[in-house]
Image 1 (cartoon, rainbow, N blue to C red):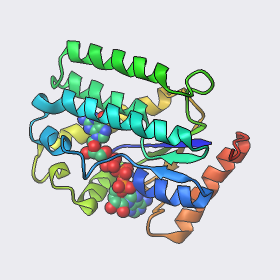
Image 2 (tube, protein in one colour):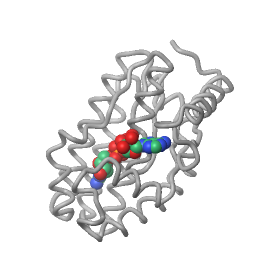
Image 3 (cartoon, rainbow, N blue to C red):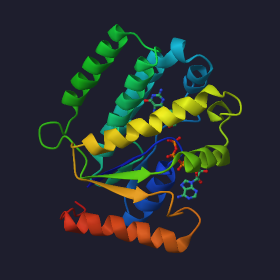
Image 4 (cartoon, protein in one colour):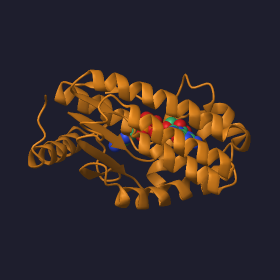
Length: 216
Ligand SMILES: Nc1ncnc2c1ncn2[C@@H]1O[C@H](COP(=O)(O)OP(=O)(O)OP(=O)(O)O)[C@@H](O)[C@H]1O
Ligand SMILES: Nc1nc(=O)c2ncn([C@H]3C[C@H](O)[C@@H](CO)O3)c2[nH]1
């Protein structure tokens, strides 16, 4: 069983990946952020580093998908499909050239075809999308406190985050690689409220059961 979490910056993917993997007795695979050397460079100069950052994420994401595939049951804290959403948005903002987009799209396509499970199973068993509002997103980004993500330091991030959230709505609606479900990340504080956590875990359990997904 492979469960993949999705959602905008600060939605709670890493937090839920930890909780869910414990609940299901599986392993969690995390997006590397604090030891990502390109991320601070990107936030300081997006135009210069958007393409490099994207290649960095693609490489790391691919590595963790391959690792996750070697285990039968696991939870991934972001999907490879969202990287593409980020990159196309940045390209539309003039931070990557059409040539870079073409190279990235073709490389992604090529790499997906090389996944060891490509022939049998190309997608996760379930995508769990954590939906949050702009206000919640900003609160969480502030709570976590990564300097380069703070709109106080860089006011242009306000527009960047609004655009990202808007694109996520359409992205989720169009996503059809696997079964999917939404968690209301504004309503349920699954990090600090045990009652909310119970509700969220029950929602995921029900979805897995109704889809007949069982641990292998
Ligand atoms: N449902 C929640 N209720 C309260 N706090 C939360 C919730 N989800 C996440 N948080 C807090 O918000 C911050 C961001 O959460 P987390 O790192 O899990 O998000 P993420 O989606 O993995 O972010 P990113 O995409 O940037 O890696 C953390 O400080 C976390 O404790
Ligand atoms: N440009 C860009 N492309 C990606 O594919 C991508 N994936 C994640 N991120 C940024 C968002 C958070 O700051 C931080 C943690 O999610 O990394 C990305 N940024």
